[in-house]
Length: 259
Image (cartoon, rainbow, N blue to C red; front, side):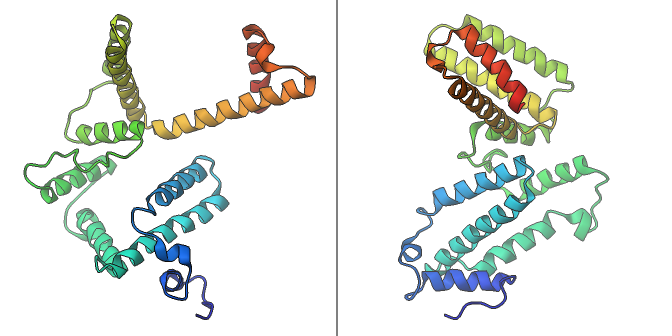
């Protein structure tokens, strides 16, 4: 295969993936399946999210390319197995976008984003099997916090939600009290779950993506602890032998350095 001349063309990506899967292509690429590619797809999704969290547009461009490659790769595997083709993927999403936006491509009306979401949920309800739960379409393999926010967002669209934040905060206080009264590991685990679920609901109502917020919190902790280790290294200190008060003073110093 001669190298594609137009590297900006989507068809060039399709051709490259097809060639890599062919007899003269790459042994590793040829042996991949939908299942073997699963972890790679998930990893690329997380890397896109990390680039978004960091507002790194250069990296986002690269990571979106990696994610697009995964999609084309899966479509090629499917085509070879006679399951579907890339054209089916594109046709399906185009049709869905038109169908789910009747206020743009049809005669429905939607004055604001809330009405769009309400219309969206009504359309999805028509598409679901009659006895299927509206929550059945939420992928169970989503990270737990993101799953909590998604299911709560879906039920909120049909009115199952608190009128005011105060009600959710009272619910959180109730769950904390129940944790204090819990007996045994199993009951404590259940109460922790209820607390996290309620926190996810509060964050959703405030427009905060809890998964992204926790990732940022994790990165802040990593940066501050690494700064503490660097301070100890420069001063010849053994972190493990410091008292908790001394460690906390280092923590405050590290916060001043890395935020």
